[in-house]
Image 1: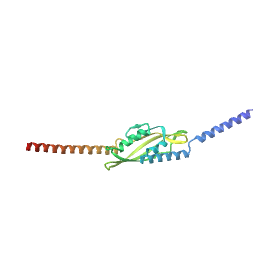
Image 2: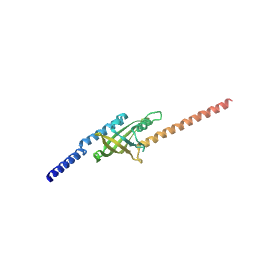
Image 3: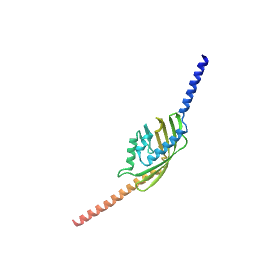
Image 4: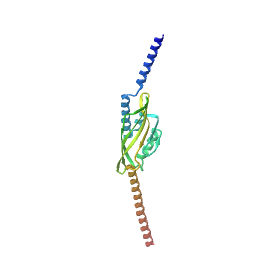
Length: 200
C-alpha cells in the first residue's frame, strides 16, 4: 500500500513538474515578442492605428514623450491626429526606431517587462527635421496564447531636446511674422490716414 501511495505521489509530482515546465516562457515567446515590437513599430510609423488593436491588451495605456497619458488606443489616435492634421498642425510625420536593451524579463509565465532605446525622427510642416534619442519601458502580457502590450512609457532628455527647440523656433517664427505683419499694417494705415487728412 505504501509502495502504491509512493508511486502515485511520484506520478503526480512528475506531472506537476512537466506542466510547470511547459508553461515557462521559452525562446518561442521571445521570438513572438520581437515580432510584436516589429509589427507595432510598422503600424505606428505608417499611422495605421487599426493595425495596432490586435497587439494591445484591453487595459492598454501609453505615456508619450510630452508626458500625456492615454488609456485607450482611440484616445491616443485622437491626440495623434491633432498633431498631424488641420491648419495648425506642426508635424508631417514621426518615425520611431525602437531597440530592446535585453530580452524580456518574465515576472510570471504570462507577464513580462522590457525596456530599451528609440530614435524618434520628427518631420515638421516647415521642412525642418529633428531627431531625438529616447528611452521606453513596456509591460506585456500573454492573453489567449498571444503576447500583447499592456503599458508603454516613453521618456526623453528635457535639458537637451531638439524637438522642443524646433517647436520653440517655429513659434518664434510665427511671432516674428505676426509682428512684421502688424508693423506693415500699421504703417499702411498711418499712411492712409495722413493721405486722407491731406486731401480733406
